[in-house]
Image (cartoon, rainbow, N blue to C red; front, side, top):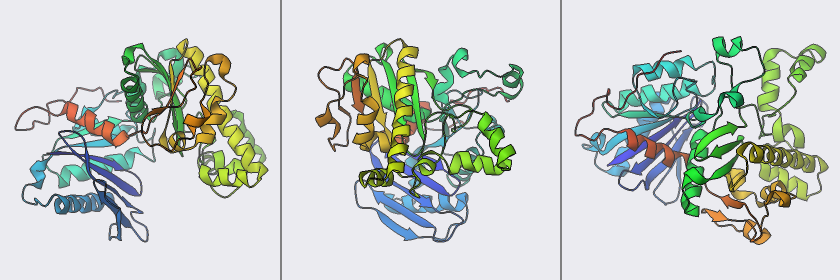
Amino acid sequence: MHVLVINAGSSSVKFTLFRKSDLLVVTDGIVERIGLKETRLSYRKGGGSRISQNVQVTDTRQAVGLIAELLKDIDQKESRFQTEITGIGHRVVHGGEWINRPVVIDSNVKQIVKDCFDLAPLHNPPNLYGIEACEDIFAGVPQVAVFDTAFHATIPEHAYLYGLPFKFYREDKIRRYGFHGTSHQYVCRTAAEFLNRPIEELKTISCHLGNGCSITAVDGGRSIDTSMGFTPLEGLVMGTRCGDIDPAIVFYLMSQKQLELRQVSDLLNKESGLLGLAETGSSDLRDILEAQKGGNRQADIAVEVFTYRIKKYIGAYAFALGGVDTIVFTAGIGENAAFVREMVCRGLDRLGIVLDPNKNISDQHHAREIQHIRSKVKILVIPTNEEKEIAGQTLALLPRGNGYDPRDGSVQLSTP
């Protein structure tokens, strides 16, 4: 028996098939460059080597159909395969204020995902297309939506409201929503398990650092503040996103540089961040660090800005939490860039945050401590696993019976 996790994007569909009994990965992969030239399927069986091949796929439904056929071949039980998958979990980026927990998907849930298109125009539409494709191809299999925004539903009003006229919140729901919630939730719970402490006792700062970056203050397992806001643009400097800026810069760019609205949006979302600061032609921190080692001053500046912003948020959240027990680094940069972790923690001794340089440079790929023996704060590196988190939340909602009633596990939600 298995649970399938689907992450449908604008030009890709990622998939992971887990064994239901212990959530071990049976196979995982991606169909990418959908609708473009050289569309590819890449996958691996368990811990085996990756297999890649060109495929003829033009839309999300065809990609899901291809994945279904692949999984049948891997399982080698074509006649029984439909019943072998007991549930499908979908990553959905935005549920607004209307969905604050994982939910069994029904027409009401799909309508809310659609109503949030304007809040996440690059993510929610393909998320919904993935859901609809799975409903068609895996007919009768219960499906669950796990929302990036859901973990942040516990953020208090004083932290999620902006200093705008209140009517814009009341009428248009303009507020801080936060993202990467599934990752933050997973690593915070894993941190508590690793430290053998009840999560209710921990004050944690979770640093999800990848091409997209966010930091979350977690008090007793509940998000109380996070760096991303109304959209994923706010907060830290990221691969191509600017993060926090003075909003008046937008007016300046439009009035003095004659940029159109779309040009400003592209500038802030796609041309800024590490890409714009380093001027190396790459948003990949590995390339920028390599340029920095070669004496590239612009790359050095980009890394300093990037790490300073992280350090500033850690300080702010330590005070918002009233103290901190543990700091967690996760995602591609957080897990692998020892130099970034060293720069972030440098000079924080008075806050009880002291890194051990030898532990920090370890190339181990599992949860580990990297703080110095003098550190009052635990500093952890924890590989994130959003797919496993989605699979676990999906299984928790599946009805315990032989049949499946789509009304079971669903919730009555108010539409926007």
